[in-house]
Image 1: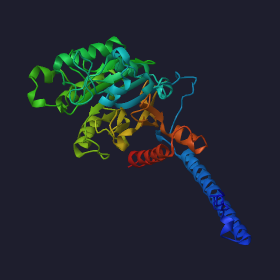
Image 2: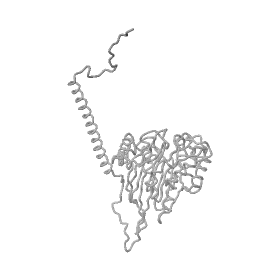
Image 3: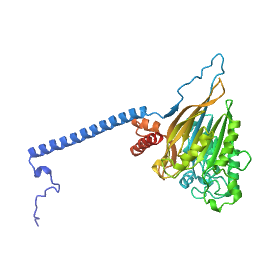
Length: 417
């Protein structure tokens, strides 16, 4: 039996079935023009980005981190005088080990590794004769804790030491988190791994005097108070260096008699405030009036202004807050840090030690995210920003680059305020 056959047309519908060839050509031309326009816009925007980055790089090149430089310098050897000596001291702020840092550093078999957090910065501080900071954590036999009662693995202290810091203040509001015995354990461990310490009153000597290139530099340290102070015993409170004018004056008098130059490390101020409080200013006035040559503040977790004061005996330098050296605080201004560099000159003609130069290296606590192999690391803010602006856009992402620019702007605004 014959079957009906129909011409079966292809299931595909061609655009030429609906439009004329002329119209098709016009559409192709229009689409081509649109693509070319898009490509041109992208190229134009890329060129604009390149020009913006070039301008930003020029601006970065112009930024100067110099705070003070002595107007009259003479470090040449004369016929009648001994040569001048140059002493370099670097300083950072509070050294914290937050819970997130503990988690990031935790390896198998309960081993902790922290060295990678500091590896980008060591070259900036190891050339100094003394590098100081404030250790705002304890090293006791208690469970590790990044917040509240702070206690860190000994590997953290060793990583800080390996990064180049060699003198630490242990006078903070967390000094007595584990009482006088915890403070003693902390000091003993820090001394064991090679740190010089200051800020406790566990022993008779409360002023740390370091001899550097025939100059004697004194270091004093105080905190405004401690956590849960009312619950601490008299013995506990007497073990840490809590500021009072009476105690500070006694220490300063001792330092003036036995040293050539005096540094005071102050744990003071209000959290996250970029402007010093009236109380900070009053304490600074007292310290300078009684012989302090350099005051280095910390505790607010952000940078605060710096100033040079003229005194009858030369110049005094006050940095109200150096911020944090490292922490896992998730507040952008707290990630903006610095390494402060202080140059002293011991004059050959009379043996007097004077302030010669002050500058700083901007640093940033980079958080690479929870899934990163190494989550936290310190980076050179200006160096990384310049490299990105110079074309190495793989070094950080654009979001981080913009944060670095904002951070550099913040530093410039706050320090010169």
